[in-house]
Image (cartoon, rainbow, N blue to C red):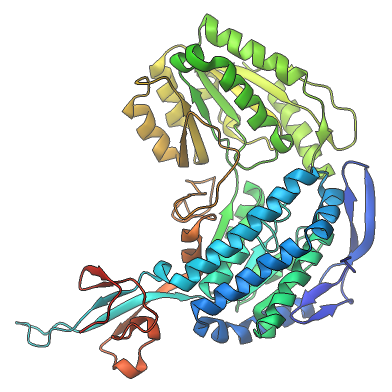
Amino acid sequence: MKPDGGSLIGFGSSGIGGDTFKAFDPAKNTSIEPSFISASSDDVARAVQLATEAAPVWAKLPGADRRKFLHAIAANLEGKIDDLVARAVQETGLPEARLKGEVARTAGQLRLYGDAAATGDWLDVRIETALPDRKPLPKPDHRSMLRPIGPVVVFGSSNFPFAYSVAGGDTASAFAAGCPVIVKAHPAHPGTSEIVGRLILHAVRDCGLPEGTFSLLFDGGFEVGQALVKHPAVKAVGFTGSVKGGRALVDLAAARPEPIPVYAEMGSINPIFILPGAIAEKGTDIQNGLHASTTLGVGQFCTNPGVVVLEKSVAAEKFVSDLAAKLQATPEAPMLTAGIRKNFTAGTNARAHQPGVKVIANAPAQSGCGAAPVWFETSALDFLGNHGLLEEIFGPSSLVVWCKDRAEMLQVARAMGGNLTAMLHAAAGEADEELLAVLADKAGRLIYNGFSTGLEVSHAIVHSGPYPATSDGGRSTSVGTRALNRWARLVCYQSFPETLLPAELKNSNPLKLRRLVNGVWSDGAVG
């Protein structure tokens, strides 16, 4: 499969639009054919119209049919993995093994969310039967559940061309929840995006679903994304990227006559706290794990450990010195885009000139998109007095914060903003509840004696956190089956006759759902 550069508007495509752009090979520092055409305002209108027409069909689509569709997409991705990975290697500079693993994760995610749609547990069905003879007032019959909200817009991310892009978690969870999806492809990997988009459309046709189930729009700038967010028929947005980009979309959505939610994953420094006993027991293992975690993917993970907090001691100083030597010897590798490389260089250069900050590793990087680790150290006092040190530098860079004692460690923890993850390395019995409680207030996922990179998709996983990690303060997750809840809203049916109730709420429970009936969970019939 090869891309042709046109947006996919339902079952049609657009070859007429605005400016053109090309993908870029960061490893070879060259552009890649073909040219991609930015979608026009008519393309946006057509994609949203089709999605709006498809929304009522999707709202009624049984969970088993959604599962069939999501499983079909997964199978299509697996069947074309060689084509997908070959194009993604060109557009991202990421290694083939990493990308094959990402396709596998994306397929597994699609199947997990499809299965969740079929079982229906996520719908949170609740039934309170009437008590007409209750005194002094009768109790009405209440039945509630989550229902899909309608057309969803998803923005592809730069750093995960599969798992967080066209068929990634936001798209998969929105489909599973019963919503049609319009994806605004990331301009860093448009060819990969188009191939994935065509595979989704094959599944749409094979499953007999409406044309507006899915569309994919290209744009080398911001106009198409802004137009989609502002369109009155769009009901929610999923985004993975920078704080600046996420905030722009949140503010745009809030300014609409009808504001809509934007579920944006934005900035995270993912602090790691290493206690003295852990260094004494397994310092070398932690050092190796931290080096691998912070250099994985050239540091371009949203869960990259960006701040390392330690109590100062002879052993801790040797730990950091040895780690710095490993970092200094780490060869450069291409970053995803020239823009990301430019921002990384600007960020590390600015940090190097901050008061009280010292460079401890700065491996040379020569190529246009290449980057190597750049690490810093500072004192807790300087860290607490400089809010700029709380900002994420996207790439292979971290900041060591030296504390004089555990009390100062707690101060540093309390000063943190919201994060996707927080890590604690401790010997047996060394961790204290106070530090753990602070970290639980600051992050969506706490990791004990482990590292944040490498995220297993499961029912229980949480990938969110307080602002600025996410725009909604960590009240939802973008990974795991709870992700479906973002694309639905609660509806209560009061005193409805059985014939007019949705199947999920009928007394007979024809879908065999697990429901909360008069305060007791049951998968049986009512009455």
